Amino acid sequence: MKKQSAAPSLERLRLQEIISALNEGVILLAPDGAIVSANSAALDMHGVSSLAALGKSAAGYARRFSLSYANHREIPHTQYPIARACAGKVFSDLIVKVSRAGSDSYRMHSVRSLILRSEEGAIEYAVLVASDITERFDAEQRFEKAFQANPAPALICRLSDLRYTRANRGFLEMTGYGKSGIVGKTTYEIDVLAQARDRALALERLNQGGTIPQMEALLPLPRGKHKHVIIAGQPIEQDDESYMLFTFIDLDPSKQVEDSLRQTEERFKTAFRLAPVPMIVSTLEEDRLIDANDAFQAATGYMSADIDSLPMQSLPLWTPGERYAMLQSLLRQTGSVRNFELRICARDGLLLDCLVSAEIVTIHNDRCVLSVIQDITDRKHTEGELIAAIELVMQDSSWFSRSIIEKLAQLRRPAAQRGSMTELADLTMREREILGLMCEGLDNQAIGSRLGLSRNTVRNHVASIYSKLDVHNRSGAIVWGRERGIIGYQKPPAIRG
Image (tube, rainbow, N blue to C red; front, side):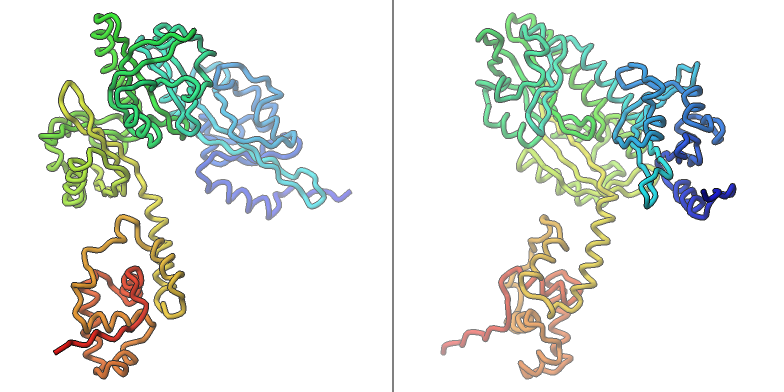
């Protein structure tokens, strides 16, 4: 048998270099369970500063760290992720609670394994990859505790399949359902919006994942009974999934109505504050900021004390201010705005590309605006690279058919920008002739020959076309023209005497 060199192989050194540069925690294991390498992220996630502190092997790791599942059930040493990886088991998205032996502090890890095999199929290395999800887990636990501790009736529905996933004690006591009688059922089996005062609006908002305003409804109960309630729905995000938080007020007797109204406000505040996406509330008439949740403060760096009660238009958030004014105008016209692109300037000067969805809601009999903000800075960067590549390809558009040009145009410009304030009527007859020949793929010299014009004259007309269409190059003008059915040169109609 070939004797293995004591020195690390070149392949192992290269693998260790790659691992050290990763943001996720990575532990490299030999088939015998020895810990070969671990990057700094893995060490930080375990609260240690050296490889030896991990235990040097799977067995040593088990002596130094205590692991349990998210439900606090202790994991046997033989079922530790590191032991399963050494045994050649492949798994993913395993959530474990990790703490050092004898310590009460913990971190939550989402763990997956990779197995590297030789050409003969033998295990050469096992790789354990972990992400620290402690903050997300703690936020969800806080929400779960607040949800379950809240005496006001509440029900959570997953929007992907319209299936109820959680019901708190207040809901179960109000309705008489057992947990198994409601959790797992769909809105088709138990329709909480049955005979709602504005059922069409409620169903539309439910399907769109939008806020369902308070309205009276007839809630079905066990054994064919019904209860008159006030129901409201608030979209929330958990575990990278979208849910609807239904809240209820019992309308019988009247004292319960008053108590439930107060509890609804507290419930809304809890859901608003713990929501993992940035959210703000402002007045509609005065356009004054009322509240901002923790996620908004974390994303922008602005604390509530810095911006509360200030006019929204005067906040140093909106870049440029005209875009925010446009958002307000659309909101007043329609009552609801979805995925409006807006750039926000954080307190440290960092510009964030965001999608803003806003809804007019009623709070304390005042019309307010609830805005949800999604950071798409990374996605915009990726789209920018794609558009740059398309611009490079489209420099010579004569190679492409009209259908290909149109498809590239759809990728090149967002749907909201595909319309243009400029129309054909804004172009002179000569400019329309030249634009048509440009759409045929002719260059300036060929256009001049066709129309009997000098090259400089054609160039001046092309510059005027660029200015009117608000484009910056020939491909942009061609896309604009072909989007409007301009395929090629058409002879102008004769003028009758």
